[in-house]
Each structure stands twice: as C-alpha cells, then as structure tokens.
Image (cartoon, rainbow, N blue to C red; front, side, top):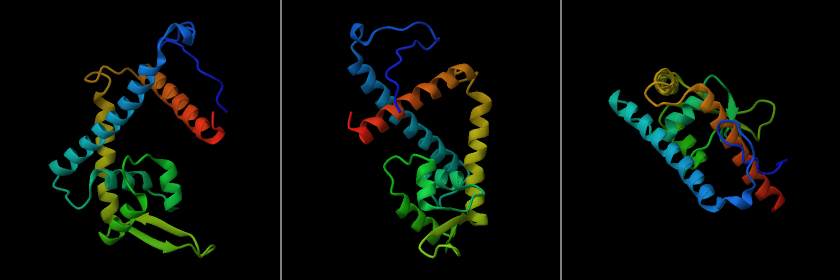
Length: 173
C-alpha cells in the first residue's frame, strides 16, 4: 500500500513539506516525460528495425516479442510484463501470429487458456531489440549523462508514482 509522498531530493537529502511546493506542475511534467521517454524509446526501436531492413513488425510488436523472449505465456501474462502505450495487445498478438512471429496454442491443462511463444522469426526480431538494449546500456552513462545510481533513483521514484496511481484507482483515494 502507498505510504504517502516522500519528497526526498534526488540526492537522497532531507524532506520538504508539500505545502511549500506547488506539486501540480511537477506531477504533470513527470507524467508527460514518462510518456515522451517511452515514445522516444519506441522511435529508437523503429529506427533500428528500419536500419536493419526489418519491416515485418512495428516497434510495439518488436518490444512485445522481446518481452516474450524464451517464455511460454498467456496474453494476460504479457500485458502484465510491459507497458504498450496506445496499443491493443490482443490485436498485436493476432498480427504477430498471422505474420509467423508467434505460435498460439491452447493450454493442455486448461483448454480455456491460450499460450503464446516465439517462432524463429519472432526470436530474430526479439534479438534486434535485445541488441539495442545492450548497445544503449553501453553508451547511456557517457553519452546520456545517466550514471547507474541516477537510473536506480529514477526507477525507485517511478515505482512510487506507479504505486500511487495504482492505489488511487484501487482505493479511490
């Protein structure tokens, strides 16, 4: 459950009461930046796909394939693993099956459940996204000016925001 706002500074410094700061523009800015960063990441994936001549999938579908990886899972599992901005996961799965990137089969134990897994073609696309992650991890510190500790802080803060919005919805805060 959400433990309340923490108002820590990025450097881990002291607390500042919320009443001293107008948090409304800060909240809006954070939400907009998260969306923009996600969109930019998808643009980078699209650019990499284009550069390599892979035109069979779009960026969201490529990230879906990457997130499936070596797993054998349901569409619900996949949706829970990632955030696919402005996309319909079921539609994309249907497209990826039709394009030969995924295999879709009924579960032997529970015939209502449908499991999905990558084909060899899907694995090649997932590998493109994996290499892009590897390349980014190798350059983000120097070229992006983002040391690992700042990325750790960012992750913690984004998890807190996520938890806040989740609690807001679930508990109608």
